[in-house]
Length: 310
Length: 303
Image 1 (tube, each protein chain N blue to C red):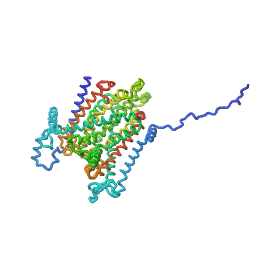
Image 2 (cartoon, each protein chain N blue to C red):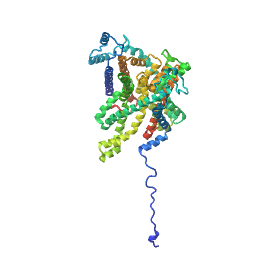
Image 3 (cartoon, each protein chain N blue to C red):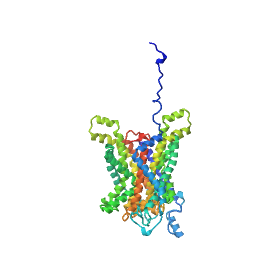
């Protein structure tokens, strides 16, 4: 277990280093540098700016400087916002995104798992058909369409909930559900197929033959085992919620990191794009690592050979 | 009792049991029959065919172009003259959605083909050679896979500048991972099957085994993955357009149209409705077809 953990951590470090390097080089491969789009600046001003952001240093020096700063968790200054660092921006706006993301994850688990279980138990009955239809819709409708529809119906037509900003519980409902649409559908489908798989196993027959109560069979024997594969979806789900937040936060004018990222893309604020990408990659890589480490504990059939499964 | 030759008659041979009573079906005919029985998948297929026809021929039959502006006719609701209404520059939305179909479908199909080429070659090589090569190649895939694909695409689009060709390039660079993984996995399984062993024992060469046994038996999984990659690409393009990294004006994909629609959501919701419907219906159709193909091509996977 220990050697596997160490190997996994080493692997994650290598992945992060590669991501940082590739992203860094990509951002510096943009022709002309970040300030050329600005209205014709006098050459002297241009020089000053470049000196201030150390753009005159050779690339390898910029790179090593950046890496050294990274070990101190310093992502450097923003190009567009005077006097603000990338750390400031992330520190301010990430908590909001985190809150929104957690809301959506909770919603998708609380709705998705029971929906999948009902669907599996009532296989091919109308409940199953209805749930499968809704989840297909949930996968097919892009989140920005869902969000716009929500705004139109619940905020404008019915005027039940606020359409924008982030000032309290009622502000969280629409964006959280809009962001949860796709993961909820995926979780429901995953739970359903995994539940059907488990219900066909011999130990369920044994449990039935023993005369156990139905809910004991369903809860203790079926659901517990059926949920193990759902855990593997945590990684992709987090990635989906994260990228989904770009759109949802922009539409609902939520001051989160996703909206900042989109704004920095519009503004071509390269240090912010670079820093936020690295931050996001760190989150996802760390999360995937935790899931990989937890998974064998949940499912004893998986052996730790130090080898990763494909 | 005397038995003479006359007491015996030769039995006329009945051939009824020999030969098959029905024509034998190849794998593809069999799969097609299974697919035809799946109503939802066929609905998806019909919608896709209709969409492609509309995208290719639709704009030819209209007098106006997707970029024709008529400011007097701006923001008109849907009517007999403008079926889907007009946008803020007075451009006919029906025509723009049809043109958008061209671009969005092209993006989906090209991305899926790129995905196919890169993924199948890469995954095929890794799975076929196996051993150390496989481990190194798959480690690279694992590393790339550990960061959300959309982040790469966004980064690439920031570097490459928005535009149709660059969307193709970015999607091509980023989206082959899944395909490579699936093809490699299939290769590893099929390589160990008895019929491959049998082929090897009777002296079939490496290339013959690869071309006659391994690749044809991977095709099912490859086609399913390709079908499901199309809506993925359309979705990604819509997403990119939404955050300002899509195709450039006056060209318009569905993503651009939807993104413009959200800006005027409060006053003219129909401007979002039609592009959004187009995207959703297309996604649904491809998902239906993809699921149906999976059931039809691999009956063991049916659930």
